[in-house]
Image 1 (tube, chains in turn cyan, red):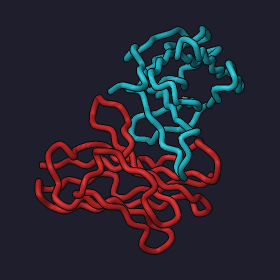
Image 2 (cartoon, chains in turn green, yellow):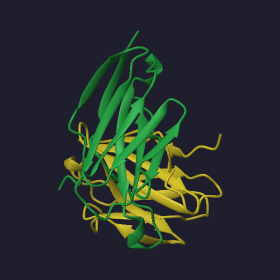
Image 3 (cartoon, rainbow over the protein chains, first blue to last red):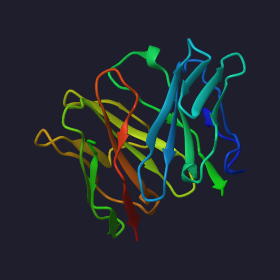
Image 4 (cartoon, each protein chain N blue to C red):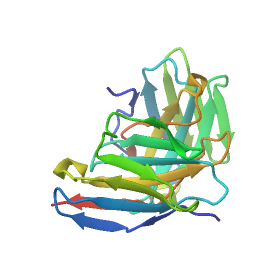
Amino acid sequence: DQQVKQNSPSLSVQEGRISILNCDYTNSMFDYFLWYKKYPAEGPTFLISISSIKDKNEDGRFTVFLNKSAKHLSLHIVPSQPGDSAVYFCAASARGSGGSNYKLTFGKGTLLTVNP
Amino acid sequence: EPEVTQTPSHQVTQMGQEVILRCVPISNHLYFYWYRQILGQKVEFLVSFYNNEISEKSEIFDDQFSVERPDGSNFTLKIRSTKLEDSAMYFCASTGTGTYGYTFGSGTRLTIV
């Protein structure tokens, strides 16, 4: 059951251009969304997040957009740099479900390659 | 910057044998997790641990799996009788109160032969 879907396994962009990574979700209970970046032989690194009460969150070159009605979010990287080349995971959580944990449901990831 | 440390980085184990994966979370974090990623697949939640007990576990986390925080600093994942399908990258993570910005370790690549 793929509650979080990243339909593009890979994306290639030129340095300096915009990278747009997409993510769709099916669980309407999800109310918090995150993007993680992963380099080979390393663990995922938290990048940026957004609560469902917002539609945009920006941090430097990274912006996440959330369209709740479409159950879709996207990560924009502008300008893209070769060091951004990595696998990007979308993740989601249902904070409102209570309990004492912050379990995340991940997508399969998108391999971003930024060419010099 | 504080890190989550996982050992070993690689582990090869015979099918049916027990394996223990070790993690040292960030010292002031309260929530601890194990996730795994089978090659080419998504990162999957296994278990969360808070206040010295399991707070949630996935259906993957069956009776063959257990977690412990034996000494206040280490957080271990034990697989009692390993199967070929347990081969995966296992990630430990920790987080402080009220945050989803997990810090992940670099992972242990477990290969069952």
